[in-house]
Amino acid sequence: MTAFNSVRFKVKPGRDQEFLDAHSRIDRDWPGLRAVNLIKTGDRDYCVIGEWDDMDSLSAARPHMIATLDSFRDTLEELGDGNVTDPVSGPVVMELKPRSIASEMKLPA
Image 1 (tube, rainbow, N blue to C red):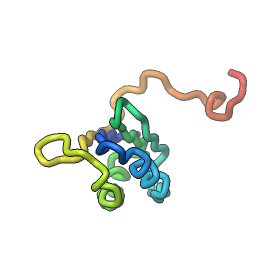
Image 2 (cartoon, rainbow, N blue to C red):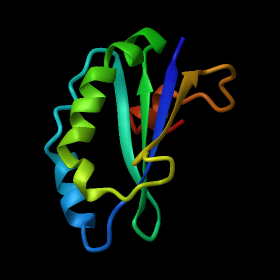
Image 3 (tube, rainbow, N blue to C red):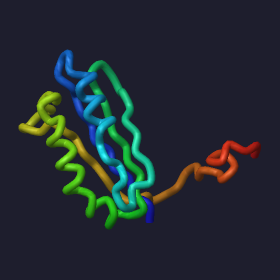
Image 4 (tube, rainbow, N blue to C red):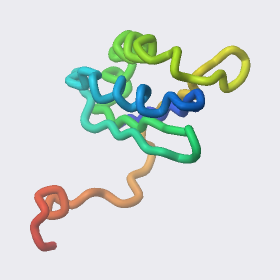
C-alpha cells in the first residue's frame, strides 16, 4: 500500500539558498520513491513530502534520508528537544481523490 512521509524544517536566517541548493544536489533515485516535493510553508519554514510504493520502501530508505539530512544539518534551526526535523510517515488508509491517467498524461479528461 502507498505510503507517505513528511519532514518539517526551519532554516537558520540567511541560509535558505544553501538549504535549497543542498536539496537540488541530492540523488533521489531511491527504490520505491515515486515522487518527492519540497514546499515552503512560511518564512524559513519548509516541508518535504515523499510518496513511496509502500512502508517497506520508505523504511529501507531511512539511511539515505539520514545521510541526506547530514549534508545540510548545519543550515537548520533546532525545533525543540534537540531535533532539527519534525518527521512523520505512514501508509495511506484512504485515497480521497485519486489521480487520473488523463491528468498525469496531460490529456483532456
